Length: 227
Image: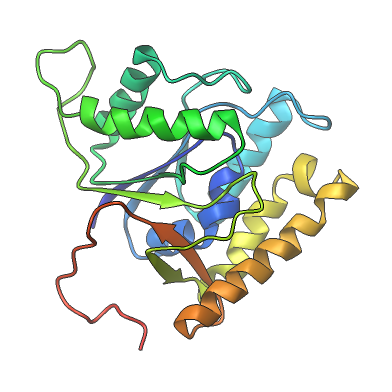
């Protein structure tokens, strides 16, 4: 089983993009840690206390652990300190696989998070540094899609989440201040299901989540392919 880190700029980004995959990986016995770069506040109907309650509930639904890194929402910057903070989290978890946002995005926090995590992967392997923990170089970086653009994903692969779709939706709805209280955001939940349904149709399943990789995907066999 693998140690897996899922980094996101704000609580709920990971659930929206890959909540089904997170649940599936946890069900398969992998050690999954969700890392929130910021607490996502301020928002119109939220507060730090409300958001913590919501992200804790979502993590429980998905069956994973969660950690807040603590950078400032709306002010995430690609700095050496931020890189080293994420590298320390990678080392602490000894992550072999890291998920992060797709780089094509309109949200500055999302783009900055992508750069931070990409460079933190490199920093995590360095010796003779003040970064705490044992050096490790995660073997895989996989990008998920949670963009603030009308962007149509062109994924490298899709993962079947047919059995986890309802769990994913429940984890999104745990963020009541974001997707239940604000009427204008309620359609997001249905849209996510529709998008995952479309991605599922591309691989012959009911629901799937898309991912992108810049590096060749290594397969030990064809047993995991959806046929």
